[in-house]
Length: 436
Ligand code: NAD
Image (tube, rainbow, N blue to C red; front, side, top):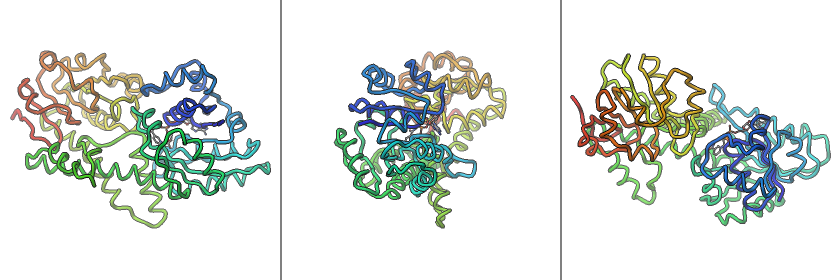
């Protein structure tokens, strides 16, 4: 099939590369001409394991190309995926400027039947607005359908998630749209949920909100563990073995971040409010998430007493491992809070250093590895659970630091081993080994 993807970010590039790998002819478009020029030269603007290779093979096979002309993308394919960003506006609403802009461009450039598919995460009833916008601006008599096909991939394992999804959700209003999407996805052999457009839109917001709620729930329980000296790891294991609950998303820590959960939760709360429902449950989820970062900062102060002019080393900046994505990473809030209180910061992340440089400039010392980060530190804090941090040589770290103190926001180390290695170690919802 001929497919166009408008918006060549994390989702657009992975979707485009995977559809081309499945044998389709794909054009990825973006209004960022610089990004498209880089992609044409084989420079991939994001870090996602396996993506560079997949793009390289499929561009060589002429199944994947890039353009900054939305017109070209609209003209070339019967199926057009919209994968532009839908960031949060200051008031919590999703910014749908990109979606509206693409819908208008499609209307103005359609040269035959088109199936326009929302891949971006959007509030319920966006499909209705996309349809209305195209009807308003269309100049030709060409027919079109709108469909919703939310994306559930996770950064860091996006290609595997796309190729082996738990389910594929398709929201359609016509048989033609349904048949096109069903045959496009047929090679993936996944369970398909075929429904109406509004239900499909809601499935995405409800899924992300549910996952965020699971994280906030275990974080709230971790606070009780902290107070009584119970172990959140044991509690989570005991809960997660119940098949009705499941093991995933029960890792206590400094909370969720990233480009999806915070903004999707905000957007779901806001659209619910607009529709006349006060989604208090989700407001509490958001509040617990914020409190986790404050709680972590309090742990740092509790260990260091006065933090001004102390040196803190940060292991991990990205919002989760295996990505360079810093959007809404908990690290950003924690760094800003520490910096504003006069802490001297050193940091290392396996993939996010370039993006960190853009955000923090010279306000933090960016180091070449964990060991350089530890040099001269009063405290080392873990903000992302990268595998590479799990196997560090702590006797070396101890020699490098001013004092052996580790505060672990992701519970990646064993408290007993840390104690045996001579460290004062604090983590989330687990018995701390105190220096006091
Ligand atoms: P992104 O910011 O990485 O990419 C969006 C791209 O769209 C950018 O390259 C931008 O230049 C381009 N763009 C914006 N407006 C445009 C326009 N008018 N015309 C053409 N191009 C335009 O965002 P992303 O992470 O890929 O997310 C895209 C959507 O997918 C969002 O709605 C997001 O919520 C959703 N989503 C993201 C993930 C994820 O893990 N990143 C997972 C599932 C769903």
